[in-house]
Image (tube, rainbow, N blue to C red; front, side, top):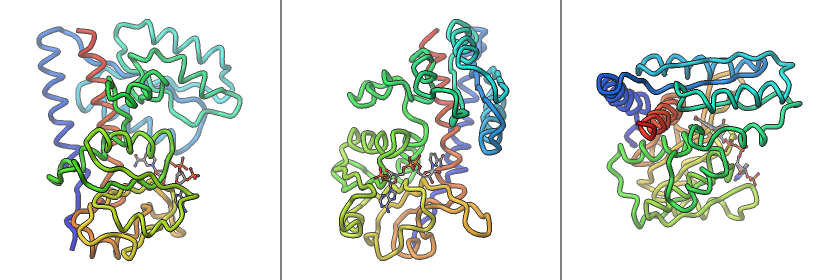
Length: 282
Ligand code: NAP
């Protein structure tokens, strides 16, 4: 039976460290890390995410600014706000919650954020830095996954690591981080043939597909570390991962639950990036 990786606990421990470091820096410099979050429109999931981000900022003692813009905001207005925040000394991190309403160009928005304040690590300068292993910020979800693996005491170096999914925000950067930790990394996607043959090789399996209960116990190796990034709603509206927990739990050595695994880590890593951005200005 696998040990369950408690993402809430790992996240809580990190937030306590962030809080005490923030307090110590405030005592020394009289300044706090500042995060500005922009939300455009009324997407219900996005509203919950930004409210959680604001709450987390306050919890660790950051300065937090939330900009709620109406659905009909123009590109010009949004870029003007970003430019203002780029030049605001109180703000060290800027995050524009995606997805944006269809009339707004997400790529232009990402490019408009100063890379030194791009705490989501979506700007090509930051994604490029991740590629060459010389990063300022780590992409939040993959970085959270690395912390969870670290919490199990599992050595990544030399291990077979399989990442399922190749999105720009999860799969690709996840593979790079595992590679930098000296894993032997395979990336799978919807065109991968004989997926089960590949997943069964994995000492460490990270699943980011977006399909409920897709990975079943017969697809994993005995003793594998299984990290489930997926967040799906099943027929009953319950939050569920990409991994069939019941069957995989019997074979894995460590496994993340959904909820309570990767989810709580993402915002914590956003706070970590904001703290890093702040420290760069001191
Ligand atoms: P995405 O952009 O939709 O990418 C999904 C990836 O899965 C694609 O690369 C796709 O392959 C691959 N895929 C789809 N069907 C497959 C199959 N049958 N076999 C193998 N690979 C398959 O999704 P994402 O943004 O990376 O998110 C993935 C999941 O993680 C979602 O459930 C999302 O909600 C969740 N998520 C959670 C957090 C968190 O904080 N916990 C953060 C971000 C995302 P192709 O490239 O070939 O299409």
